Length: 158
Image (cartoon, rainbow, N blue to C red; front, side):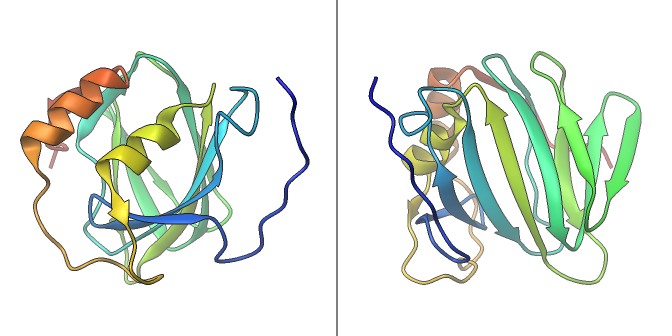
């Protein structure tokens, strides 16, 4: 594989509306010889992920703005700006935005590939804003999660 140097500035990257988040793909598996994928997310208070398990990659979250609450088994962690949370593959987890304001955060997946799930499930963003909230297409979500070796376990714990 022939790799090339690339650089993206703030608000640059392929933009998608994904599960009520704005996602900017900063680096893909294709660009990094499958070493990693990096996606910048913007999400509103209350939004997050379902409870799930990644079978193909580890996830590392780095919170830039706002606060995220992470769940894994009985463990709950709050990550504010400057926090890093590592979520290894094969361990159930999920997150939601908490606090008083929307959150902006990076998700680094190693090896790369998760960004393909974001691009396939999401739709190209018409603007760099949060999408109008809507429920996901559960049939499409389930099929693509299986394709990307993500096991959906249900809603987050309360």
